[in-house]
Image (tube, rainbow, N blue to C red; front, side, top):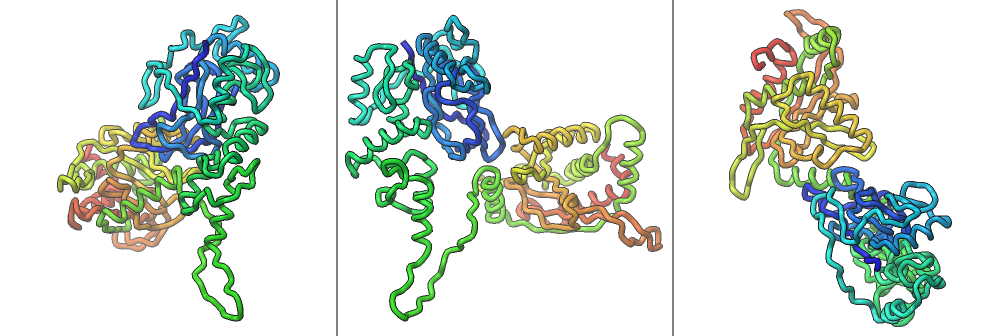
Length: 501
């Protein structure tokens, strides 16, 4: 006897509370193996492929691509059991698409003998994400809607292996898609079109006081954001189903003031009518963090121009000597760790609840990286104990991962000080915003030839502007100025670093 297990969006760690569905990797009816990735989601930290801890047949998916789900919300359901798996695999072989992209729907070790990949129905994965364990969850009794009670009773009496028309009851494992009734009871977007019409007609046409004719959680969220009552909207979908376009149209109607009758001219404030881009994912996380930084941290900025000619010459000499290439940001990082050793106040955080400054012993150095998904700040762990070559290799690894979109949440959290090289954008200076809850950020502008007084004469030198934004609660201007001056001295005379080694 097959069991239908519900897999919820697991805790993805690092305090993340929601994730957006980017791409489904399986379809309803596919056979999946234990730990097979089933969906790709985007969090405020990174892209994550979520593996399913059960092996069996996908009977339902919850949410369309682009939908944002909270941690703990249902993600999909899986029918676990030998008989159900064999029948669903047979149905998939008649034209379905498997999770691996081929036809047949057989995956995860389900062969012609019909032995399921999961083995015992109670077996579950040992390779888990944060927040869900290896034990099989207990079967839960669901309260069905009155309209679905007859369906459930009919399932118990219907002969196994029969074919039911779309929109009618069918036992689990028949050639009508497994889990159609489960989808109807949960209002799923993956239900076939005919079944959606039947479900919507039963749920909405029977009584206006019943459940609102909405399937997508995205539609409900949009309605809440615009303070719209879904019961007052007329849906344009099948049998009055309320779609996203219906909510957006109603929101525009509320925002646009009606024309006043007669010759009286009314001047009213009109909401901006430009394109609206949701603040979510990486962009939303950046917005939240920067807003918090500005509202909580009393920051100040100081800057200085430095002659980087000798630093550039030292880097060229290192790279011509053989071995792995040394990047400029690695040299700047090594200078930062030396300056932080002299001024540990800037490698700290503020605990206002305890009214304490927490000075940190390890330097986890973040650096700003611009990607197609937006600005991210990967973190080089234990930068204070790394050599210049080790720093260069780690910067290279994290930069490539940022470009490929494969950074993990652990790669993007835990920084204690940030280095921001905005010179790559062709600008000279900036006033960085501190990466909360850190206490400081060093900004580096472009290095360009400029007139400079060198050894008492005007000469063309490679000049860079350095700027430091710091939390004025952790130190005063003297400490910040001392840090920045030491950084500039090391840039102008790299031999000064030898005293720190």
